[in-house]
Length: 88
Image (tube, rainbow, N blue to C red):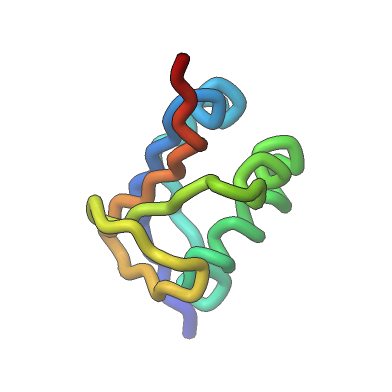
């Protein structure tokens, strides 16, 4: 039996603009265990967003700590996608 988990999502910069203000998802835990799984799941829901999330230099943080794609997420985690910072 699968249980559901709720993850809070934050998108910044351009990613926020194309995310349609998704802030929270409820998903089957068996489907989403890692950041890579979450990115794939988001890509299936919105290919435009998914394409942006896998671009080089997009960082992911979980509970305000930068993590890699194999990081295992837990119910209640706050996952933030951070685009590259530009300046001038």
